[in-house]
Length: 127
Image 1 (tube, rainbow, N blue to C red):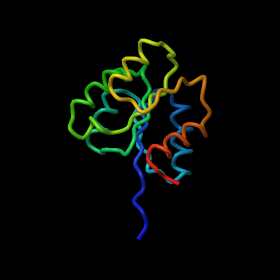
Image 2 (image 1 turned 135 degrees about the vertical axis):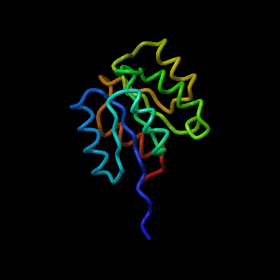
Image 3 (image 1 turned 180 degrees about the horizontal axis):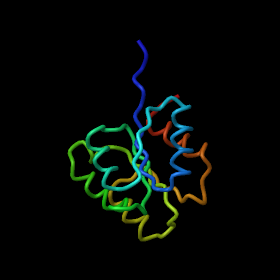
């Protein structure tokens, strides 16, 4: 019996980045679902209940921090691991994200794709 694939939700409005992340995580054996705005991201998170969420902060319709606040109000959503991927290295945003128990905060300019994959696998204890 094979292990159930881990579900990863990527909420990112930069389509080229979204496609790269989706492709790479799929190759790594994840079941990837995506959203390009905060409203559909929140909806997908609450209906599909992914094992981990990669979340951009600057999104159309609802920003990432608002999504996170709404997510944490849900009994399931309060515990799901979230990794923020953002262009903002703004200390205030990082601190606000931390208040909502974000697993990690990665500034897009500072990370490589393999680092993100490694962090997700470590958090989900996937080989």
